[in-house]
Length: 156
Image 1: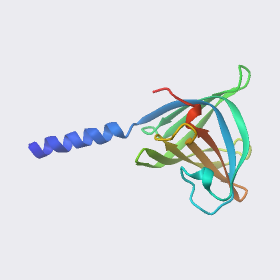
Image 2: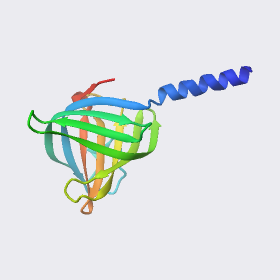
Image 3: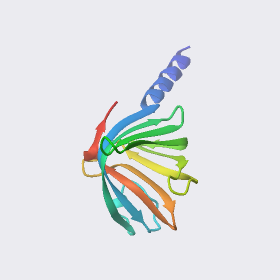
Image 4: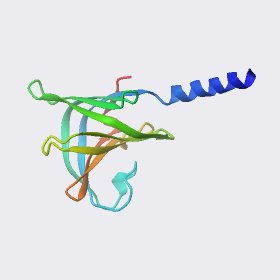
């Protein structure tokens, strides 16, 4: 019985530290291009082949639902320009020392084809470091978005 109680305690601890949902918002982000050969990780800003492409503004409310394998991004540029991005089939979730990686799919708004987007969330990020990195492969290169920790407000 003692071993069973210990096993249940460990299981409950692991479930509580591996949250089933993340909620956060941000108000600005940077778009980037990457032509390098190294694996993209939390040090992306230092990788050869990384370059900023543009800066975006507007409120983004993000819900990452690991239970239902879905990501929802409600975005608001102004009262007239708002919308929602839905990602499904969330998979390959890993949490290593507060860095959560996973991938999900959505329909590309221009090509109408299903594509895979990769996500890195660094819960231990410093204010000027990337908190959220998302990227996808397009036209022989990698494009993506970086949200610095200083732009993020936790919802939950």
